[in-house]
Image 1: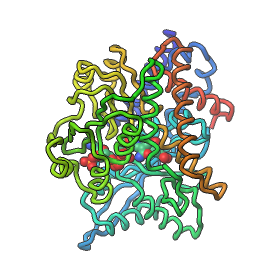
Image 2: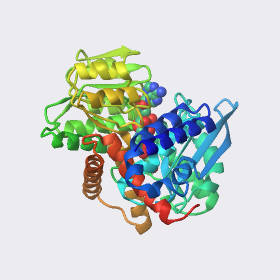
Image 3: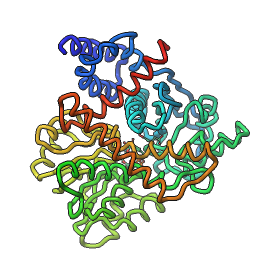
Length: 449
Ligand code: NDP
Ligand code: 2IT
């Protein structure tokens, strides 16, 4: 065990040296390597053929210029990224993020996590991620369209239904996927539905893909509570974010009898003592593309907006970080624990800092890591690919049933793997190890490439 741990520590140091100024990537790598020592002790073949060194180096990293013209005729230049991390299990699969904080380290952290998440779905998809430092906030539809067209004018040569299949992430939803798909179709002269997921219903999109990540994260929490003989019914919840993941987390919580009290954006949060009015929130976010502060203005006396605050200070039974990385730190974890939180399910990617994760686990809080808990989105993306390949469209009930089955099976494999390796209840270790074993076995079988 010690030999394995020493080797993993040395490897981590080497990764940090060779990839300077990529703190999010270092954090994601560290979290995985910290859980793998028992696997290396049990399966010595994993220490051979440079398996880990190969897994930690993306198969391909693409960086490109994205020039576009705003409505006043000024030219802007953004940077585009696609990191094709690992294709041992299937075509690269993962979202595109448009946010000013996007750089190569952020895309690599997301792509690295995606490898294990996608492996956990069991659906034959490799790991990749992309995006741009473009900020869609405050841009007109025409500006977003021109940006997407310019972005795709380079990206199209790297993607394809059997090669690499992007989808949405922060700042990329149905509108952007539409513009990206249109440009891909125009350039290639191909109706290749399976090249992107998150498309609209009616032109190749899957039923409940928009809902899938949030729904899945709530289903994962329900599974964790079920193991402890509890359910979501009657519980209060805090949810961060007010985008795609947060909205459908709130919807599924309400369907299962829980009461979500909060939502947030980068300016602050809303707490609503009566529980979030989802129709109002959707109108503000999905139709008007407004801010959550507007919700408090229109909702009346039960709701207030707390500028600059964090939802974690609102007492609740369960917590759903659904905005962005490192949004829930050690102090937030202490507050949640003091307020009696029972379960935390990560809708976002890496929203909880390592210190906060350790605090939750030490306090006996059920903690579902994003790789497992938010895998519902990419899982339904893979179902969208399957429908596209068969030129069929499944009904809502069928996709929802499949999603529920996939979330149950991801929970079961993470739970069972943690027990098998002597860390019962540790879903971080269970998810990392189970995802790793699937990718590692495929890589060993496919030779040194
Ligand atoms: P959206 O763009 O729809 O929403 C993002 C939300 O998070 C907004 O409310 C946004 O507020 C807030 N946010 C983003 N960046 C920051 C920041 N730096 N500080 C504070 N708030 C921030 O994105 P999604 O809902 O799709 O994604 C949310 C998270 O879920 C991300 O971590 C993403 O990687 C992850 N995820 C998404 C999946 C999907 O299918 N979409 C699948 C799996 C994971 P504001 O508008 O003020 O920026
Ligand atoms: O982080 C993620 O899993 C996503 N943004 C969804 C990726 C996808 O390909 O649907």
